[in-house]
Length: 124
Length: 274
Image 1 (cartoon, each protein chain N blue to C red):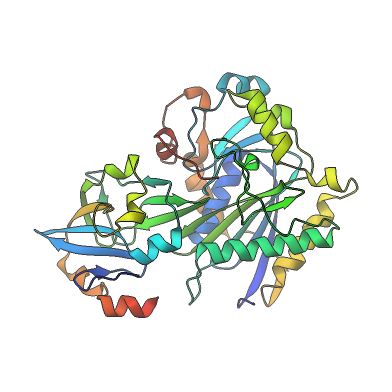
Image 2: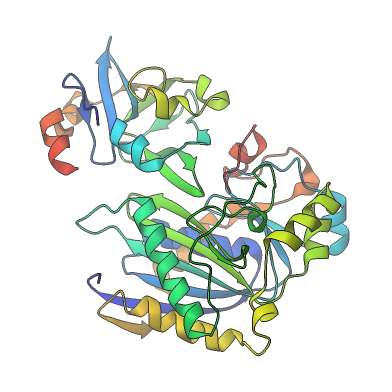
């Protein structure tokens, strides 16, 4: 199970990377392993305003729908459209081609509540 | 294993498809206690998995038969609800975050124990059936499912939120395969899949009653907890169900029209999983 040291995490198994004033997000390697083969991804809408902890979409694996929750408050400014046709990218490359969305975050203070790799590892 | 707390058991009167699914969704969103819910359908209802595509449906035939169509908050493929035991089971998230596969296996074992109590003996090994392209839940058997003589006797799907896990299950007592198959464009194919892949419990044990099976399930699910209490809905749960009702109203007659938020995935190129 891969847990990159340079990312931050939520207890709901999202990873977050700060990039140019935005937050790039996806699910962790642990999460994709627990889900099994992902067959569908419902992505958030670009332009949607989200609150931290709000449901922004879901993924379906074998007969299980798992909700996705915003790791930070802000506006969805991009989603990974490739997941619509290739949901398996979540399994194959969760920290790369399987990214889910990019959020223009609005509250710098919310970053302090995210977990570093060591704290996330302890949760598992 | 045993979870902390008392299992609340709910028995609902016959409700419409959207009302039933909104109540299940409300459990996932606001319930605070483990809950086993049994419910009935006011009309014959075809339920679709949350992201299942509608292109396989024969909308005009469904309308002519007077069936309601509804989306489930859980995954999987279509089920025609009629003469069956329909249940949902909500398990709040505790200190330990159990994987969805672990919980599936737990529910599977509880159901098998209930069936054994009723004199029905599921297969020890489930052979996967090659109906991967089927739009029908009961045409597909995966290793974690429950079969008798290779034919599926229960359909169970799951939704996972931050508050907990919701299971929805359908256990047919009898199967109306012909009307079920008529809901789809490829009627003969679906009929054959249902004939070869699915079994109603009364086809195994003709004298089995709904009440007997429900009683066995209450006892077996109850063994996972510190006790069982027949209870009622909390007011805020029903309020939430009312808020969610619009999301579960669905008309296949409207074609690709989106109603509420839940249709979006189903109308895209979804790949329902089973």
